[in-house]
Length: 427
Image (tube, rainbow, N blue to C red):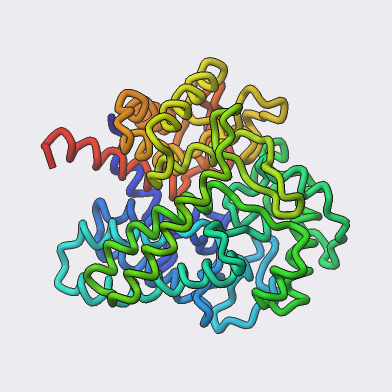
């Protein structure tokens, strides 16, 4: 299992903008939250200093209340909408006003444990404080009722922007955007691979609503017409809490370790409410209706990454994925091919994403479903070799889609190749 390592490294270097990495030139010209966390792990395979800088530059955008925004606008660009003028946040470094799945602590642990530099302890200690503040923010701002599970208030916060899991809640929105829509994405790649115009109108309507509330978390929670418990966000947060707890063993206090462990216990118990035995997968919960969302997506497999399912549920998830792969042979489609909303080329409604494959493969390996984990990793690297280091891939043909020369895809290629080499040498 390998890719062209030098080509993947060259992509990260080409997308480096001075200590932070843009996802790809022009289409995404800023620093994205969960992209950079995965990219830091890719940098760590060959450039430790750059891995540290990636994380440090990301938290330059962290708010005083602990939130790590989903975009940090380090430098101006006209190639992306919505820019800082639409978000209207008041941070010293311009940022968006919402967040993204918190991969940061997982990336921090990975970079720290692979580090050899003399300043690794000091850098990790500082970044641990940032990660802890972020997780505390998730607990306060997005689970104010103490259920154990956090909610997202915008589809973009899930990272899986126009997943079918959001269709019903978004269709209920009656808000109209006040900001004129000036889409830039479809000038860079085909509209058939991107969200539709009606999706963008709703995305921006929510941004305008929250900007009008000054991005105050309690006011946003009270006013939001879109409030969903996303499986992926909660699974990624739970895995990040697990990694944060390890870091807290070195850099934290007894009180901090207890706080993290208590949150993990509540969340692990609450995840039972997201399991759908009939569908053999975890599904999102719409807090607007109090019901589970009947959409089977790759997000529903990510609790494996966090060690949430029991052995029986892990086996059920493996069997469900095998059903998907009988119809879409390149793992893992972002929406079940059994769902009529499956679109193999449209953003998050079918295509394969390397970062999600990485987490799902790690999850199946955690449950000793080694053949399936290896199959996913091998297929992911094959997609990159044959379809290019693309943003995402068609699960029915393997074709590379979206932006090209994509940073987090390159990073996952480097990470999986490095893992494979280490396994072969018994490391």
